[in-house]
Length: 287
Ligand code: MG
Ligand code: MG
Image 1 (cartoon, rainbow, N blue to C red):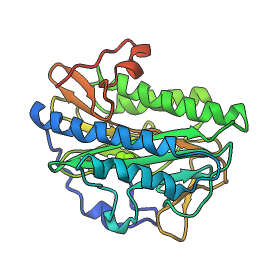
Image 2: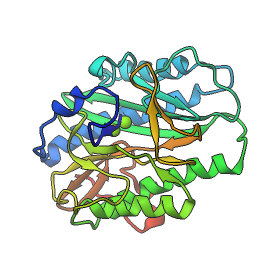
Image 3: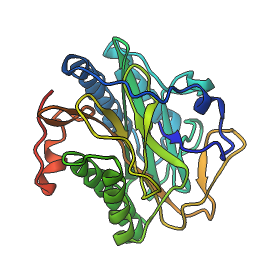
């Protein structure tokens, strides 16, 4: 799930006020528990994606994810989060993030983003994927999904050598720029650990300031949200669903990543991010 950078949006403002700005640094042992939660999230997302066929409802995807989390003996961190009524966010086409799963029926060519999380022994994981149902309607949709995925891995790769988080933000923005896509404004990644949303903010675009220092113990959810049209958005009357202001399509990819004294490890990937990072010349190291 994403984070709102400034209280200018119309989503629940109490979420912002409730979060400490102190960074929680994790030990390698704590990271190892977070990785357990992370791979359950990876499996839940795979199950949701497998359920995403034409004719399925977004609630079907959510049920598949929820079953994996329950079977693993883990707990959903999305369900009940400030009243959120499901285990995952399922956002379709012009919906960017925080879509509520329900009766919406998927069709071939829909661009679907699923965002999900889990808790194991009090430690959180959070990840998201985007994909196209059946046959794509356009090359533009294919590029949207692929370049958003690529911007995530660019950001994770940048984290491996970054001293401040602005390096990660710049790497994401550069991929978006080159692809002609726009980072959603106002919604950002976040620290993660004993809560789903913690300090620091992880921006998907350059901003004033260098961002938090990157040092061992930092665990963050990096989550580019890229839109074809502009970065402007609106929140629907359900007070959750974020849609692009111009109705253009959007994609969202996310991983939770740990920084430790020997390197980085993608907590929400069973290979630690090895396959995603290989094109960037980075090898993950287990904490
Ligand atoms: Mg998420
Ligand atoms: Mg998140």
